[in-house]
Amino acid sequence: MRMRLAFAVAAVGVAGVVALATWPSPCPIELKMVSVQPAEIINESGEMFCLVTLSVHNPKSVGLQFENNQMIFEARVSNHWVEASNHWTLGLLRAGNTREVLVLIEPGADACRFRLRYSYWPTGLPFGIGDTWAREMPPSQLSAQVQHVARRLSVTLYDRLWPPRESWVRSPHWRVGWTRVCNVSPAGATLEQTLPADKR
Image 1 (cartoon, one colour):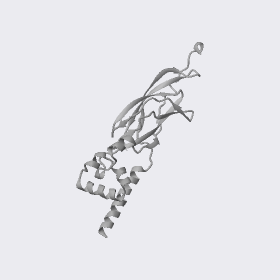
Image 2 (cartoon, helix red, strand yellow):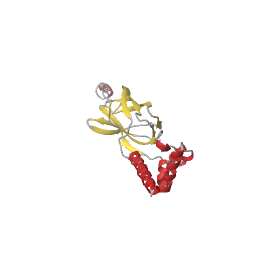
Image 3 (cartoon, helix red, strand yellow):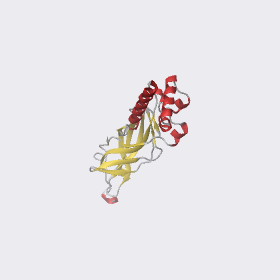
Image 4 (cartoon, one colour):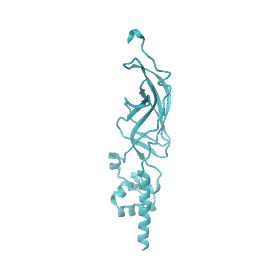
């Protein structure tokens, strides 16, 4: 009876961890405009694009791994979101770290956002959960016991909580989400320029 109760308690606890780990949420990175400058690129209407430097900050206590593909980047022009060119990727952004990126902004844009595919790079979770090395070398005897219980309950669950190294590299558990909107004014207001009439 006690053994069954212990298994039930362990199952509920593990299920709770999985639910928290997979609960949908906005992309947690924070965007902030650092600087704006003319791009010396003109559109068909004679308006000048702007180069905007953005700081990308990870406020979480865990690292964030981003899919190694170009990310969807949109600028807001006249209250409409327009997909803009983007040629960079983030890779891995460790907990508390900040990185700067340079993006090309449409004339008249006042805000921007990214749509990212990302996964958490867990560290410091109980029982070594999310740590691929803890699968082979449990950090404590209790961790080894919890892993044993999880493996008996479900091999799939065990692999999800303590993923093999090769599976983590091949197929992280990607989440998809938009960043919070970042204000890029005065990109469209103060830096908007037009060609001289004789060059149009």
